[in-house]
Amino acid sequence: MESPQPSLTVAALQLCCTPDRASNLARATALAEQAVSRGAQLVLTPENTDAIAPQKERLAQAESLDGPFIRAWQQTARRLQVEILVGSFGERREGDSRVHNTSVLIDRTGQIAAIYRKIHLFDADPPDGVPYRESDAVAPGEAVVSAPLPFGRLGLSICYDVRFPELYRRHADADCALLAVPAAFTVPTGRAHWELLLRARAVENLAFVIAPAQVGEHFAGRRSYGHALVVSPWGEVLADAGEDAEGMALATLTRTQLDDARRMLPALGHRRLR
Image (cartoon, rainbow, N blue to C red; front, side):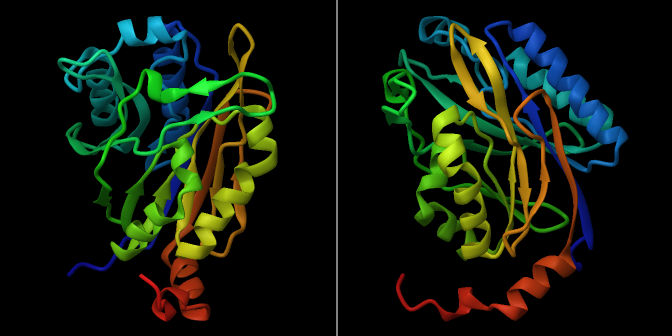
């Protein structure tokens, strides 16, 4: 078995997506290009990279996996010669008015390497007074998905999933070195819980967490918290994109950081409850 790649530079993009799909794609692609120019080898976009729009509009614009949105990202990955995780897009489902909220991992040759459909759906009433009923428009996925990368295995999840640690234990059982959490967190829940949850998932599973994020106002008062983060297995915030603008959290991860954390605190081997 080949030794893992000793280091990996990752970019967790931060976007303010709107109902304008063409503009979203252009800005996200430009940020991906900037990230690669700064050394990124793995680029991750946020949840709802295609658009954040009123429900009827979003449902009407949903695409299949072989539609133009994912094809555009396949071309970008091939052109830039990097792995890209499209954090999520609205995936059309045949025979169902609902969509899947779907992450797509694309390898550097432009091939789809993994597909994850969000399992846990955000039906909540956060303190900003705006109710969210994701399940009205989105069908939940069922499969836990991870994929090999040269640095180590990448476990996939989306936004609200981060509140369900049992999903990440499944990723730990698969020996994931990296956990992806693309998100569009609300402002009040973000202020209260975003960094706390991401650091907890990193520490309890002794893995890097990479969390691209939506930021700012998308339409008609709908806002996201921002703070795209990269967190180490020891719980250190390695990069934070802030909450003011589009940008990225860029960090270089090393196998030494991962191996040292797991050696100093081998908690995964001490589990007694399964």
